[in-house]
View 1 (cartoon, rainbow, N blue to C red):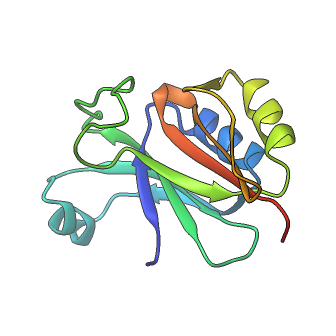
View 2 (cartoon, one colour):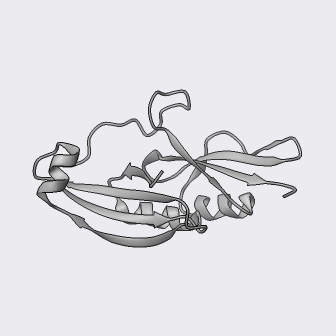
Amino acid sequence: MDNVGIVFDDLEAAIEFFTALGLELEGKGTIEADWADRIVAIEGQRVDVAMMRTPDGHGKVELMQYLTPKAVGGNPNAPVNTRGYLRVMFAVDDIDDTVARVQALGATLVGELAQIGDDWRMCYVRGPEGVMVGLAQQLNR
């Protein structure tokens, strides 16, 4: 897998949120090209894009803000059993610290932070525009 793409109305808030999760901004720019129109089947698109890289360098999240045409649809408060893309999960070293950092930016817990046996602590949070992100801390590594 190369990356997961997520569309936002506020790209800067999304960058700030994913940075607080521990991802690094790899690059940022605007895409406005015939080849891009053909790939996504939207003629005349203009999209601001930020590529975020996980700390281990193995994963990327592509954050997008459509300038032309504006983003459409979506239900940011959809429940966990909704069809289609819903969340991406990140492994974290300190889940309490990570939750505190994103809550300082306005993120909220979806349910609760739970411990699964002696091996894992997990939770889901909602960040900018309702995007759902899972967090998992492996214990006893």
